[in-house]
Length: 327
Ligand code: GTR
Image (cartoon, rainbow, N blue to C red; front, side):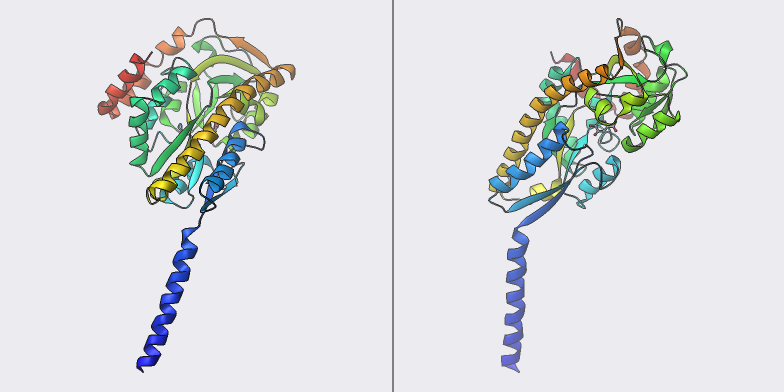
């Protein structure tokens, strides 16, 4: 009897040892919405490569591109809850979950992309990161997504009156719906993957995005007027599930962080090239681009959007002011 017990206990102990050494190698899964060759796709693949290299194979990452694992809001939930470990997310759809991160979705809050990065790399970035971490997401590094402008199939937009009555697709975030409504348009929140058909069939009249997404999705083929409103400059993150990261040893954390920073560095340089290439491609495909001589009326119309954000989040006024005071 005693012998039998020892033997079976020994069996259990062996099984536990085998299990725990198998559990040491982490196999992560990552989400990305973009197509092959897009700067973020290349940079996320680079992240996977660097991760394996810098952790000596202890952490591997399998990337799923093209939104194959679901829409962005769903994928954000997945990474928050740990169903997926990693994602390249736009902060737009993170805003409704983490109010601090929603500050970047206030129209015209950033003067330009360098201003956005100065904020992200300072105290503002720390507040945004802390707000995201409290919701289960850690931004390991920031990706560039340029500026978003309006496009549609009917006419150039020069004033808010040109947006009036237009049905415009936005990402899922009340701030964007408010933004379109304040310009007199009809906001239509919709998943990224549905926008091409919606533009083509006239379900919406227009949408808004940066040059690379306008080009990579083919939206330019069905909405040929691109008006440089540059009303939103939204950063993106290379984000990780908070428990997956916080459960790592310090050494592994450093390796993961380093891989993310190097991936972001690559993304930034690929982004700069792609913005130019995408613009050249769509313009040679017949897109009519216009500068907006006076953006002040667009900015002035955003008062209620700011007021709405601040009245729901009075404690975030200092963050808004910090961004506005950052040179
Ligand atoms: C792109 C962004 C995507 C997604 C998309 C959209 O610029 O990189 O993550 O947010 O816009 O409009 O849904």
